[in-house]
Length: 87
Image 1 (cartoon, helix red, strand yellow):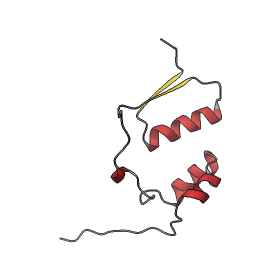
Image 2 (cartoon, helix red, strand yellow):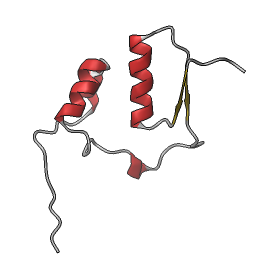
Image 3 (cartoon, helix red, strand yellow):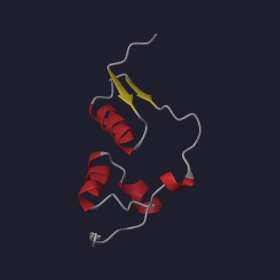
Image 4 (cartoon, one colour):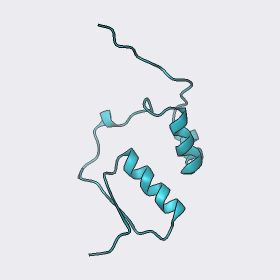
C-alpha cells in the first residue's frame, strides 16, 4: 500500500479544492483523494454557483489559479441574494 502525506475523504468541492491548494503549495506532497461515489453525481448536484459568493470566488480564482477556467465556463454572479423565511 502506498504511503500518503495527506488523505482527503470526499471528492466534493471542499475536498477537491483542498487537494488543489495542497498540491499547489507543496507539489511534492503525496495526496490521496477518496470518493465513495462509484458513478457520476446526479444532475441536481451540479449547481451554477448559487452558494459560491464573491469571497469564495477570490479563493477559487486567485489562490487556486482557476480564473481562466471560471471565466470560460461559469456564469457571473453580481451581488448577494438573501431569502427571508416568513411564518
